[in-house]
Every structure is written in C-alpha cells, then in structure tokens.
Length: 491
Image (cartoon, rainbow, N blue to C red):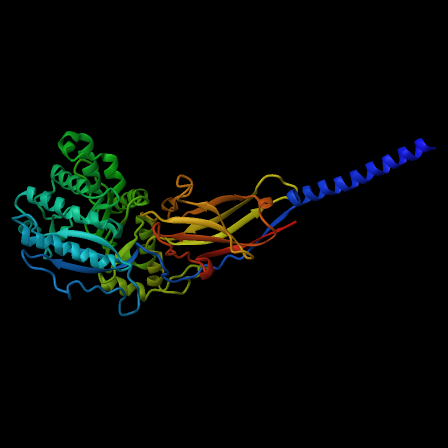
C-alpha cells in the first residue's frame, strides 16, 4: 500500500510537471509562432496635377550675352520660379552666348559670369539645361570661331565650371556650333569635327553630366566615327561606353512636320525611305535610346502632327521630359483648347495641355499592395507593392526609394526596402515609362511586438529628405511619405 501511494504521488507530480512545462512550452510556441499578420490596404487614389516632380516639365529660358571685361548686373541674375499662371518651374534653359570671344579664350570676367549664373540657380529648386553658343540670329557660319581650337578651349574652360555645379545640371545641349547651336549652318559638321567637339566636351565635364546632340543622325555619326577611328580621339582618354551612357538628344523642331522640320533625314549611304517610314524608324530609335538619356526641346508649327492625340503618342515614344513653355504658342494654345478624351482616365474631359503638363518626365502612380502570412509559419511574411510610371520618360538622375514600417504605438521605424542599399534590384531610374513595376518585400512578424504598423513608400532626392510626389493622394506629412496600408500583428 505504501508503495502504491508513493507511486501515485510520483505520477501526480510528473503530471503536474508535464502540465506546467507543457503549458509553458505551448505558451512559448504560441507567442513565437502563432501570430497573425494582416494588411489593411489604405493606398490613396490617383490624382492629377503637376505635383512635386523635379527635372521635368515646361522650362523657362534665361539667356546671357558674355562680353569681355563686362560683369553681369544684379537684374541679369534675377530668376523667376513661377509664371503668371502660378506654374512652378523646375527647369530653366540657360544659354551663354560666347560670340564676343570667337577669336580668344574666355577671360576671368566670362568665367565669373558663368559661375555667378549657376550659383544663382543653385539657390533655387530649379535644375538647368545648359547651352553654349555663338549665334542667336541664324548666322552660325558667320559668328562661330574660324578655328576649332578656340571652341575646344572654350569647352575646357566652361566644362571646369559646370563640374562645380553638376548637381543642378539636368543636361546640356549641343556642341557650341551652328545657328542657335543647333548643329546646322556650321563649318564644323564633318564626322571628325563633330566627334572631336563632342568628345572634348565630354572629357571636360563630369561623368554625371548628360550631353545632347540635335538629331539621331548626329548621334549615330559620332558613335560610328568613334568606333571606326578611335585613334583620332585617344588624347581625350574617354571611352565610347562613357559617351553612350551620357549622350541624348534635343529637338527644337518637335512635331513640326513628318520629319520634325528636318530633324529626321535619310543618311546619304542608306536606302531612301518615305517621310512616314523615316519618322516611324526614328521614333522607334528614340523610344529605345531615351529610356536612358534625356530628350526634350520645342514643339513647333501648328499642323496635324501636333494635334493632341498624335502629339501625346509621339511624346511618349520620344520619352520627352521637357518642353519650352513659350514656343510655339500656336501649338501650346491648341493643346490648351483641345479636350483630352479617354474613357476611364482621370484626365477624361480635361485639356490636352493639362495631360501633357502632368506627363512630361517620370510620373509614378502607386497601384497595389499585396501581403500574406500564415500562422505557425516560421518563415517571413511576403508582400509586394506595384507602381506604374505613367509619364513620358524615366528618371535620369539618382533618387532614393524606401519602404518602411512604423509602429503606431512607439514610432519606431523599420526599413524594408532601400534603393541605396539594394541598388541592383531597386533603381528608380530603371522604372521605365509606360511600364508597371512590382517590388517584393519580406518581414518577420514574430520579431515584432503586437500592434499596428503603418506601411509607407517614399521617393526622395538622394542627398535630402525632400519628397518627390507619387501621383496619389495618400501623402502623410508626419511620416514624410505615402501611406500604403496598416499591417496588424497579433498573438
């Protein structure tokens, strides 16, 4: 009997230990692995408006005639940042006329004038498109230097100053020569001369500064010349790969005719194509090239090619990020008086001008957020966000994208995605125009305390917290980003 009681006590004790220990183990397992993680999507709706989108849009023109020994005045350096209608400029085309130096190098006064202008713009939110030229009157042959060595010297001198302000330079235009520096009516348009000027300008300027030539044929001629005669340009110590990564186009005859007023021409050694065939080929060329380098200019001459439907289709194909606000007024007024029509679009019944204004450059719309997690799952929860670049072009200068999770209880923030950290996988410059982009992310729910967490997307300048707008209405100022939804963790 005593043995039975002793055994019973032992059994009861063992059961108690098992019950207590098992409960503890069960509680531990439950709190570590029995977790629910769910998303309540709260993404804002797509909206219209120019928004805060740098490096694109309508540009204003600021022109400076540089004279030996003559400093620019304070009034010369004044810069408007908005127009009469309230439109906020993000770009200015800055032209420096060097005709006064066609027979000499730039003096200290000229160099200081260039520096002062760029310094003035550096204190604004404007980026600049830079064009050096010798002619404003269509007299390029008369006004440009008689010796190419002078132009090369000007490029080296000017390039050194541009490098001081590379952060505000969106792109450059031209190689200094021709009427209005548009690379026609010049004595320096042989394949060798054009290439020598372009390569010199490229070597004198920072690799982050884009270059641009006037036509696709200029582009192809220069690259072919470099490939066939590399020895002619070896003194500049710059590779063809560097040129390809930086060389874009500018088009001041945009939409003016089938050939964009002579922008598209059959090369002498190629089979002749009709104007429409040539246009189609050159639009396809730009569609590929200008995902990676900027393109923009002026829309000219009221004609069917700039009727609103044709204009929008071709601006998309060319990946246009900037246009002159003042030229051609007939074309711009036509867009202002044309009604955009697309069933289901938030722009339906707005003006074509509004649509074009909002789509110059890159324009990102947050479209969707997905998230899934299974209780007892030891691995991470998986999610993704989908956005669409509805703009005509891409980004061409580095930006930073982050996806964060912020505790609504403590304010603690966890970074789920960061393009600075994962550049190869998340590069906003690769979010192509007209395409949707899905970005996957993961998180570990059992590493988080119970509660609600705000999921936020943010696109910023790389060196500041200045937010670049998504075309959505879900901006949360306190989080300095766009609300995607709330993730709730519960045990």
